[in-house]
Structures are given as C-alpha cells and as structure tokens.
Image (cartoon, rainbow, N blue to C red; front, side):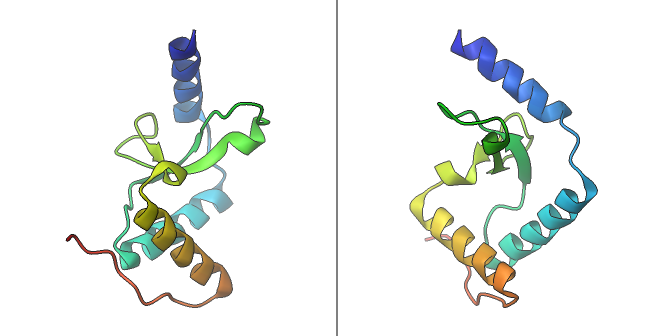
Length: 103
C-alpha cells in the first residue's frame, strides 16, 4: 500500500502550483546554496511523515526532478549543516563565507 500512496504524493507534488513569492524565495535559496557549494536542483515538495498535517509535509528537496528529489533533511550531516548555516545567514541578511568542496 505504501508504494501507491508515495506515488500519489509524488504525482501531487509534481502538479502542485508554487506561488510566485515561494518561487522567488526558492531562487534566492538556490543562489545561496550555489555560493556555498550545495546542490542547486531544489524543489518544494510534499514529504510524508507519520502523523504530520499536510501543510507540515512541504519540504525543501534536491534532485533532478521534484518526483525524484531527496529532502535536504535526509541529506548527509555536512550538507544539512552547511545548508542550515547558508539559510540562517540569508535570513539574517548576511553572507556566510563557506563552501563545500569534494574531498
């Protein structure tokens, strides 16, 4: 039963219209992530979690398409930490001087 439910959520995510203010914010997040060396193929999508309200399911995810994207919350520790710093700096109106590089 889980596969059909996840498929339906992925289809709903792909068809979900993103309001212009959210698109503008997503563009700014992409720019901040690019500067920090983080993934820039970002989407807003529905990410099901047990017991969460539908609005609580909206999450920032990274992937080639919204249906294949992985929530940033499920990324590696380093990516999550740099993303948090990047977003926090943007909200504070500053620029975080950091960059992720391959080892």
